[in-house]
Structures are given as structure tokens and as C-alpha cells.
Amino acid sequence: MSILVWILAAALIMFHMLARYSTRDFKQIFEKTVYMLAYSSKEVYCVKVVNGKVDNILMTKLIGNRPFSIGPGIFVDDNSVKLVLEKGNQMDYVEIPGGVLRREINSGHEKWFVIDKKGNVVLSNDNYANQPNWLLLENGNLLYTLAERLDDDYTLYYGKVVPWHFIFGLIGFIIIFLTGSNLLAASLKHQKEQIENMKASLRKIVEGKDLTENASEDLKELGNLVKKLRATVLKDKKSMEKLERQNEELLSTLEIEKETHDKAILNIYKTFGALIEEKVHAASLPIEKMMELALFIARELGISDKEELYALQIGMALHDIGILEENQNESTFHGKRHCLTGERYGKALKLSPLAIDIIKHHHETYDGTGFPDGLAGEGISMRVRIASAVLAYFEEKYRVKNADPIERMKKSKYFEPKVLSIMEKWLSK
Image (cartoon, rainbow, N blue to C red):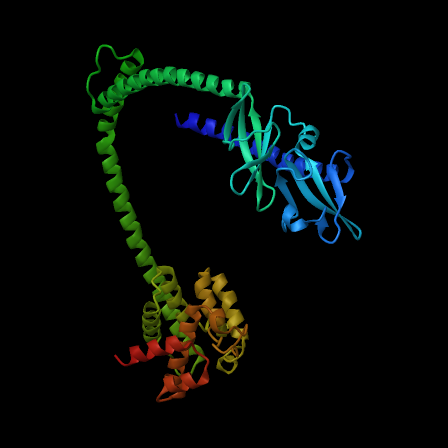
């Protein structure tokens, strides 16, 4: 039913729009015809305005202060349109009889009316005297009437003929639609019953119950197939559960083995890092404590990714691996060559890019004055900011023998302030 309403509404709206356009067109025709007759017709009353008077009658009494007036004729015997025309310095008073205007505006079966502010019909095409309705039945024609304002005092109504074939077409469509809807409703009801019966049969099949005798052969065949599948599934269920348990055990074993392998590799890198410290530097740094502090800072900053934490430890252990290159020793420690060499060695050892990042950039500074790439601020990864601060702290404490490394590090502006704050928290424990 809602579809029918929408279709009828669309048809009526389209006709209304057509009538609206026709009414606007007719308003233009009406106005053009009035001025055409005023300028050219010999059947209109036309006289010069002298000193604001026509035949000693003031213009204000004839048409007031309006540009035109419509109503009973003053100098003609019919209702008329009265207006003033300006021709150069001359003004003419023109009165157009309603009969002349009706004859020139041939509206066919349509009707038109002009109504004043009081609701009186002051002009029409067939001397219609009653207030027009939006629907009129005249001479066997149904008229749909719309209004267009001529000015503040007058409104033009135009009645558009509603074609009878349009009306009968709508009625026929409604009858056909309602008849079809009833047939469709009956068909849908029957199909719904069939679907409900099928749903009931399928429910029995799923639950493993026997079907009724009136069930279709297809449903019976489907029921037998489902029973066979259920038996197969039940048979293999224990095998699947066993495989799942074995898979969980295997994954657990692999995880343990991976952790063991990672710890072994990390121990190797710790030892390797300690050997580098002994070979290159006069005073070795405590790698275990350095890793402990670095992990504490990382976790306080919300870093929990295992790969990230593992790479941080490796990077701390092997940060000076590049010094092992021939002809490099502690005297070249502050040059960027050992950082780039360390990057190359890290790639050769198949270290993760995260660990290589620390090896290459552990001499970058927060203010951008470090090396090898002169990175600054957020351009330096957090893992490198952590590693560089931890390395500098232990360097100051164990090699420079500075009693208060943190204060000196704060003044240098080389290090991430958040990292130094967390480092102070760790040292105060």
C-alpha cells in the first residue's frame, strides 16, 4: 500500500509542478497582453493626463498611488484594467475594457480570475463572480487552480484543466494495483507457508529428528546426508581434539626453545660486548647494569614489545663493535667511522634493524650536534635516545669518574629530558 501512496503522490506532484509552470507562463502572457493593448489597441480608452487630472478627475481618485488598478470601468462600460503610460514628458491614462482583454487572451478551456485584497473577483475570462476554489468543475472540465501575485493588491488565479484520461488512468492504476496486491498477497502467503514448513523440516534435520511423511524427497535426502555427516564429525571429533592438544604442546615447546635460544644469543653478545670493552677501553663498562637500566627506562616509557626490548639489549652490548675494525682504537672513539663500521658489522651478523639503529646512532644527541647523521629530537628513535643516555651515564661514572653525571647530562642538552627523569628515579631506588 505504501508503494501505491508514493506513486500517486509522485503523479500528483508532477501534475502540480506542470500546473505551477503553466500559471507562471499565463501571468507573463496576461501582463504582456495588458501593455501591448495599452500601447497599440484602438479599442482602449486613452487620454492625456493634464496637471495630474483626467477630465478634471484627479489621478489618485482613478487608480490611487498604484501603477495600475483593476475593477469597474470609469470611462468604459465593462470591468477594466486602468494604468498610466509615460511617453517622454507626456503621461496618458489608459483604460482597457475587460472584454477586449478576454478576447486577446485566448485561454481555451482554462479559466482565469483576478481577485483583489478583499477577495472579490474584479476580472475573469467568463465574468465569473464567485471566489474560486482550488478545484473547479466547469462545463464538464475539472480545473486545478493556482495563484500568482500581480502586486500587493491583486492576485491572478489560473485554472489548469485536469485531463480526464489522467484521472481515469489514476483510477485504473489504483484498481489494477489493488487487485494485483491481493493476488500477490495470496501468493506470498502460500510461499510463506511453504517456507515455514521447510524451516520446520530443516530444524528437525539439524536436531537429528525424523521428518514427517509429507516432506519432499529432496528434504529426506538432505536429512540422510546430514545424519551421515554428523556421524563422521562425531567420529573425527576426538582426532581433532588430539591434534589440537598436540599443536598447543608443540607451540609451547617452540616458544620455550625460542626464549632459550634468544637468551643464549644474548649471552653471547654480552660476552662479545665485554671483550670489546676490555680490548678498546681502559675502563670497561658494566654491560649487565647498562641493560638493566635501559630496560627499566623503556618499560617506564610504555615500551612492551619483546622485539624492541630484545634489540635494546643487543644494541647496548654491541654498540662499539665498529671499533674492532683494523687501526681503530679508543683514540678514534669520537669519530663517526666506528658508527658506520658498526652498522656494516651488524648487517653482516644479521642483527635486527632495531639493534643496528642503536649501533649506528648511539652518538646522536637530542640537540642535533651528534653523529653520524646529525639527527635531533623526535628524529631520533626512542630506543636510541634511551641507549645514548644510559651509555653516557656509565661513561661519565666509570671512565670520567664524575660523581654526579646526571646534572652534567642535563646541562649538556644532549639527552631526552624524559629519559633523564626516569634514570633519576632508578638511581634513587
